[in-house]
Length: 181
Image 1 (cartoon, rainbow, N blue to C red):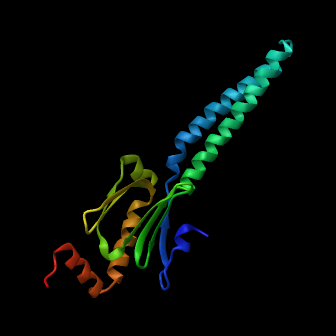
Image 2 (image 1 turned 90 degrees about the horizontal axis):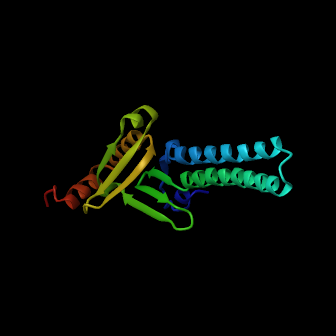
Image 3 (image 1 turned 180 degrees about the horizontal axis):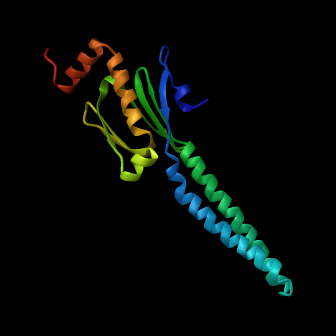
């Protein structure tokens, strides 16, 4: 069960979830490939040069195996990092959780959301990732990078705000200082 599902209040439902885009894995994938190439080369070298001194051959074999294992660890770290971030829009709030051992959560009630700014670089528009900045009524600003489908996230937040109804929207306007008393 995800963090978001555990923290739902009675009557609240998750309407949209997203996560970090796969692009956050590129550095980890590149590093793993480099480590695997180096480890594979060391193992091949040790096997191709059987006439080497046994101690040197064993060091090459162990070094190659260690590099292969390190590549796997680097890839697993990237996967855990990506999966440790949860982002959701519920019928009442926006919830974003990052981290596993040390956790950071942002929970903003929908009627307190003033602005959601979306920034997509050129490749982000093509591949479907970008950054969002959520600004609350008190001027609180929270920024999140490399989110999958940021426009859909913003759209869902806007739709849920519209569904809150006129009373909740009037409360949000009053809190912003834009409403009459």
